[in-house]
Structures are given as C-alpha cells and as structure tokens.
Length: 113
Image (cartoon, rainbow, N blue to C red; front, side):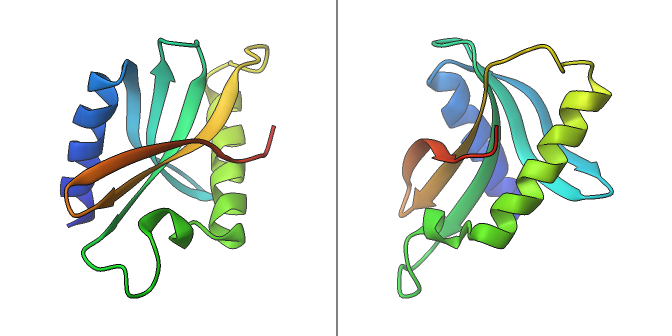
C-alpha cells in the first residue's frame, strides 16, 4: 500500500511545482521515499510520505518521530555525498501527509542542515 500512496504523492508534488529526482532511495542507513526539487524556490527536498485511513492514532505527519527524522537525515547526507551535491546549499525536509484523499505538504517539517 505504501508504494501506491508514494506514487500519488509524486503526482501531487509535480502538480505543486516539484521535479521528482528519485523515489525510494536506499543506502545502508535506510530509505527516503521521495527526493525532489521544488522549482518554486530551488530547494532539494527529502520527502517522507505518510498515509492514514483513520486518525485514531494521530495525523499522518505526526508519525515522523525523532527516530525517523534522524534516519532520514543520515540517508539524505549519504545521497548528497553520493551525488556530489556537497556545495549545493538549499536543502530541506518535507512531509506529505495524506488522509481521506486530502494531501498536505509540510515544508521544513524538521531540521537537519
């Protein structure tokens, strides 16, 4: 099910002015769902997609806890190194939150750069 919502998130992001650079980037530290460039401001965004059918346990974006954030930060730094982007200075961490066919981008959802 996760991959289906990640595909939907990619479509939504493209409609919002993002260029998808990579999906499901993996390294020894973990995985990032989507890496994209926001053409509106030039940022490369490392994006976690969260879906919830029900909000009994909180909103989707609330599932990106401190542990998950740290993992995403490690993976993003690996991506930057592997793709020779060390001197590019515009990065951020976003979350796409999906609930009941409503999509929301939380830009700068957490820090790390």
